[in-house]
Image (cartoon, rainbow, N blue to C red; front, side, top):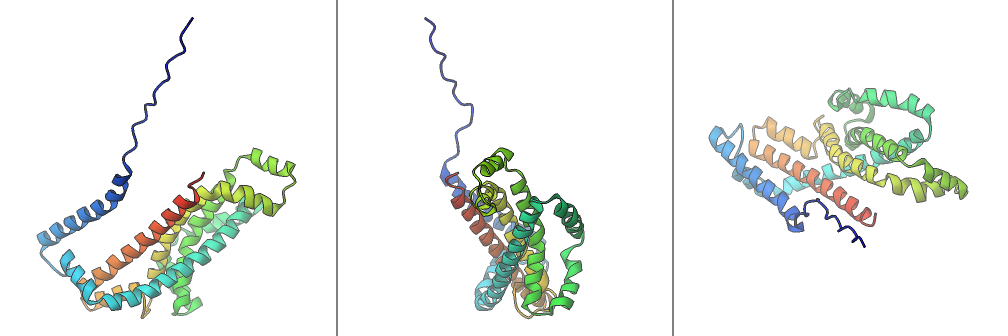
Length: 261
């Protein structure tokens, strides 16, 4: 009697230990700062590239001032992202279910991406004024397109067989959206979320460059105008930290929401 074939062992390489994932980011940051320090020492021109030590000293000295500006930037980013996400999710859902809307809406939306947000910013100031509204509008505008595309792609990739099953079960449009479309499109939507939340920081800062007196973007402009390069780099480092923190929160939300899939 023939023996059953031996089980074929998987050729997949063993997964790296989880500790390596947590070490990758701090080690990368340490390497980046070390490279920065070496380049700054080689250039030896402080106003071109201050050393990490000088920037850190400026962060400590101006901590209250930087935190005050960062609070306004964070509020603008969150408001702009929320508005952009809501508009993109609503519009993307409608476009995904209507070829007519796709032909009417997507071409001008795609064409608008050829125009940099910096070129549109003066118009936003004219329409919304120089207050917080223009920063929120700039952040929402830059978030809208990637989130719209993510919504459409996520909904369009659903297997038609599942839609037919929902029809057989006489599910309403809301039931279909709640029990099929949102869960199925969630991975793509969360991927767009990570991109959109970082882009919203860019939109808010562009709005702050247009003459605002608050926010990290305005602090960068003021520091640059007064040749305070240490403060300018400190504000830029804070912006990077803010974007990385928001990206990390989006990645954490993705991991939690997709944990049981």
